[in-house]
Length: 284
Length: 54
Ligand SMILES: [Cu+2]
Image 1 (cartoon, helix red, strand yellow):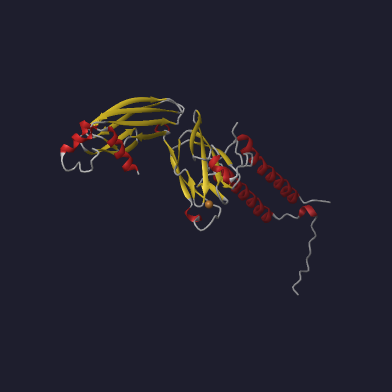
Image 2 (spheres, chains in turn yellow, purple; image 1 turned 135 degrees about the horizontal axis):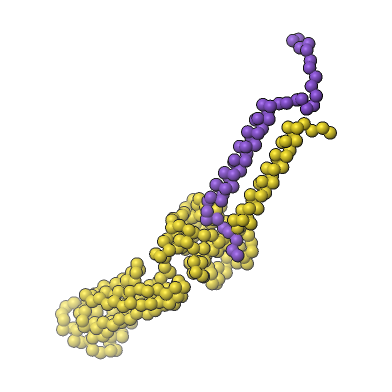
């Protein structure tokens, strides 16, 4: 069989094309390390999500220097956590699972995109070099609210990122002759130490304390104020740590309800038993 | 009716459709460029892309 020279040329060219296609995909996998989402992660029944230590509290965790893990739960029609905050210049592994039907976890405009199948955990490791904001959407039709199913992914500056949490324990009501003890708990989810200043404002008084919270630890800062110094009435307090703020109100009141009528009532409040019964009354 | 009286016989290799060849070469180049665009610009360029963790 004689093949025309042009036809031979075309045959060779199409062979080269096929080899080039395969070569680029191979280069992507071997050279660039691009991978596909697969089923290598153990299955997880949707009913067990709340018992799974990764997903019971959807969150971001630091697992190494510049390495983070994000545990994300998708459900009709939202993602948890939302927004997802990660630092720039980091390597983030997303673990995504679904509570109900098939969803997707699609970081818009990127290849960070996976189906989220109930019973399966999709795992993707990606790198974020620059700060920025991305939208996350679901691209698998999942019900009437599908078009509203979205979340935000915020890549913040590396040195602005923290995993700090602040909680404050303070009494609601105290007797005028008692002390107000306010405890601020600062926890640090990062591996590196957190240096922060805890500022407590109560009434007209301001307290400041510098704390160093170790990696994955928490510190308590307690301050004590004599209720007498504040006087009767409601007093707002504010606890500030970096960008975090907690506020509340403590009432200094005697056990009699008519303490607004006169300052004399303050004298009646020395009885401990009455004081505790007042607190119980208020709680019930 | 207007059938030409003149017929010219050419051999297999003398058949030389240059226009067709030019068209196919052009098509081939477009195909290559589209592949480069699809893979290297649209796909690899849309990072972050999931990668293999060593
Ligand atoms: Cu969905």
